[in-house]
Length: 333
Length: 284
Image (cartoon, each protein chain N blue to C red):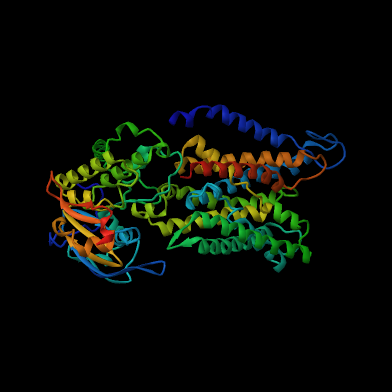
């Protein structure tokens, strides 16, 4: 079994890095003469100013969602947990839209302060959604993983409906309509968004990395972790905080991208085993690369038009979700 | 020989009343599990906890580890008020082998075993490896031999059979070498040979290492044969505590197991045992 985790890893990384480079290189720019590798009429610098932040953000947001997925899957002992399915992303989206409606972003063309304001309001929304889901999913002081998914899906649906209603009602939302918040997109982003996201990335990934040992102790379940002498409550709430930080800051920038955090932790575990000192960095890298690739498809599938990113990740993610569910059925006794 | 740096060990004061439950009431999720239960048991003994499903055996074990806090009553261990101990001090002195556990994917058996030696004195964030690594390796190789899992060390835990998983978790619990070890239905998933082997192993561990072991089980005959003390729970009460010799009476067997049983002596070992007395009892 050790060998499975090592074979092919170098080839695999080379392929992934090539995919990422290709994704960064290829893509259309809306405008005259646009083709597969960009527009012939626009110079490279102009095109990079559009695509540069986009691929950088895809890497960062993919890492956020991948690590958030890894944390939630371990904490809830459910291979299908992920920020979107547990309702955390939807809470963040509602928080962010409420923030915009209340004016924390300071107008329509927000700068650095606007981004941070929106991220903080997304964080409040994500935190509230997490508290509700954890409350509903807890029984006798321990989390029940099956209830968690049901609670998360139900709460997510409710919060999305409210978000849609809010964005359809008023119009201080600039280009960020219901479609953006519900499906996510990386279009129209600039370097300001990247720099406003970066501190959250560093803090949240640092916190996740610090929790790797505690999460290793959670692999056999919460009760088992307690009896190994781990401070389960502390680890649980710090992990939820990290997952909220990761998903809320990602949603504030790119909307709630469905199922984007599901695949990366599974690939990471499959190739590197279940120790979190490997799973966390691997989920970050794989998540980033997968999202960059999904964004490439979003840009390229219909040249000259943007497909919301959530459509692409929802398509691949749902297929994987169903396959994983089928696999779980076989393991049940 | 202790691996962990003990913040507060259990003092050995009164050997015969090492663990004492005084009017302990337990509730779980708002439901009463045990009502004003009192009993005591000695140190260095193999103690069998019997009772039908849902009688509160697991909850009683949880109340010792601190996962479940009693609503009222007092628990004394080694003559000190156990409930006033911090959770991590309790768990420095108690190992627990769960009945139900999540089976994670892709965890090697040897890494599972190492999880048991988490150092409470060290930083929990990093689970710093044991400062006495060599001694830990000795310990682990000793217990892997006892539970016959040497050949499984490089396998994935989730690919083992139920019985093999059980043995790995038992080795993990005992490798922590605490004074008290609690085993929640360790015989579940084991075949008849495995059950007897495990009972013999536990007997030997208690005798040779002077550890105390409390285990829950459903096989009354194995319990009578191998345990030093028996505790029987029924209907929120402790209906018997003491040695196996006096355990099988009308008041303990009939309410818990029904009236189809007769208590006899094992013809080979002379230990008390239960025998099915046929279907004729309904006419009497």
